[in-house]
Amino acid sequence: MIQGVETKKLRVIPDERGMLMEILRSDDTFFKKFGQVYLSIVNPGVIKAWHYHKFQTDHFAVIKGMAKVVLYDQRKKSKTYKEINEFFIGEQNPMLIVIPPYVVHGMKGISVEPTYLINCPTELYRYNKPDEFRIKPFDKKIPYNWELKHG
Image (cartoon, rainbow, N blue to C red):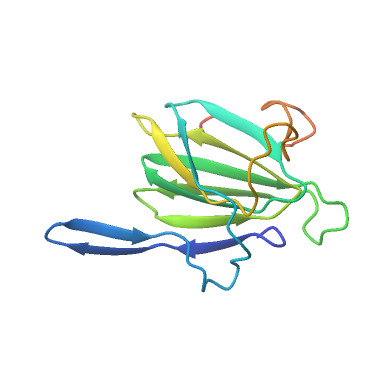
């Protein structure tokens, strides 16, 4: 696992009315602070990648569908420099992923319908000066192939 990345199996509480799923709690060991909550929707087969933040920690959870979430450690002083983590999260595997600053990340929708991802970042989005740095999805600097792996 990339240094500083954490995962949490999400608690699902079902009953005859439906279910409740806890995503992020202020008593989680990795919780730092609240910035905002937003929903990102990715269409089937679409790749939303790559980007990283200098200050923000992300907390990703897929609440509808399935996504392949990929992380790349570009931090030269990290013990896990150049390591890649690949997660398949969503309805079939409810999980929260904590993504620290400077860890590059992206996702691909792998369901037949749109995938819904909730993020609870530690920082507010600054419209005039975003803490968001983009890298093209197929940039060779990141040794990752987004194609479906058959076999």
